[in-house]
Image (cartoon, rainbow, N blue to C red; front, top):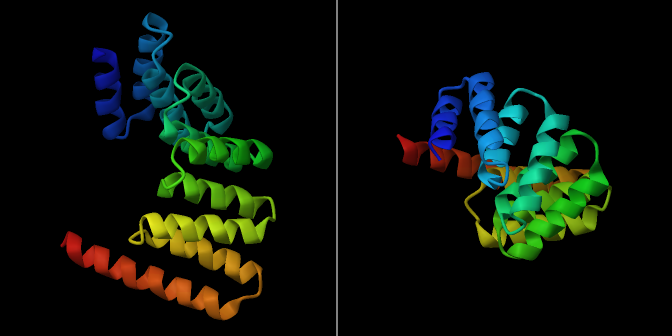
Length: 174
């Protein structure tokens, strides 16, 4: 537990190499701790070591198949590796755990889009927006799909909502 906290603090400071080493020491002591595997994967992803990150996320999902956020992270890691079929499977696992989770639905939309399944991507992104309408990045993703479908007006509307939300959220932070 102490190594997990130390690694997280080190990662927060941006030293992902040191964080990774800490998480790996923790995993050697407690190989069945899914949080250590997930944290290792996040550090590997931050270091642009996506293939290794995928392996660590896979181990984390084996140890705790109920962790939705790990499935989402695994889906996006697979997409970075152009493993789109695997990305869809991971996103479906996340969405199965919570069909209304905006992150799971965003991952599902991204996986469908990367596979050229644009109509399904539109549905997933709209469901994500229905779950959390304050996420500009989802509107941007939806706009990209609309653009690919040649639905220019809808793409423009989605981008406008994303821009307005971004402005509103930045004003709220100030």
